[in-house]
Image 1 (cartoon, rainbow, N blue to C red):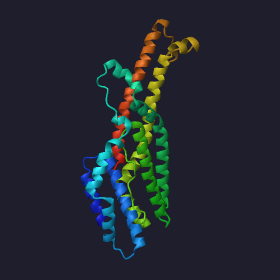
Image 2 (image 1 turned 90 degrees about the vertical axis):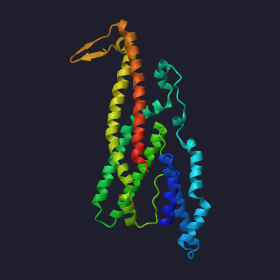
Image 3 (image 1 turned 30 degrees about the horizontal axis):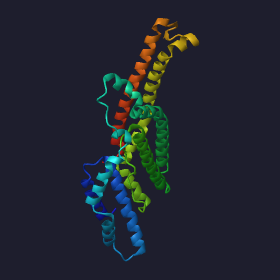
Image 4 (image 1 turned 45 degrees about the vertical axis):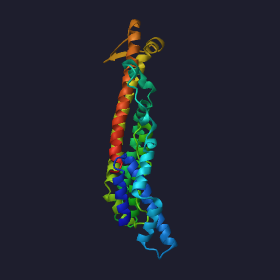
Length: 296
């Protein structure tokens, strides 16, 4: 990356200081890719054109940092996930706010995220550990450098994919574009770029930690949801299937019929409370994902 492009990107980042980090990363990636591609095309068409002249022409056509920042600021609101743009419902009463969680898209998004987190966690963990082991094993060979570059590049892709899932399910604005790295660099130079970029390591840590988070989420999800559904279905469980609701040690206990309404109410309340818990977990995980996966 040339000094002129560096200066432009730094100025663009300064002009967008009030924007969301994900929007800034998208803007920087778009500008960087455009400059690199346009510079290669211009120099191929006219080899006598020096780099500064070419970049001056490219920047003039692309727009100044102030102009580009203003364009992104105008559309930033529409780049936010729909669920994060929805107005709150503070005017509703406590009862409506509590049970209204079942019509909240953010709660259902978090509910689904907790289910699939274990699946993605297993896939991420397997890929990172296997890829890292292979890259280190072949690092002494000539083809080890391209293999390491491809592995680190795949981490960027997985981080971007996870970001899209976080935005879609948790309503947290994440980058539409991955961080741009020049492809015309030599393999060894590209490897140095990846290794010296802290986002590579933070993405790797995030992908590895997704497995324990996924295990924790699925334990919480399965335990509370199963408990709630059993309570709600108490009449069917005991009267239709003849199964006791309460087990203790080697014994068991059938709930009296008069307790059925109370048990079903407890099931509904616990399931509703879990939906609130799931939404809160989704909000916290979204902030954590943004910290780990979005460039500063």
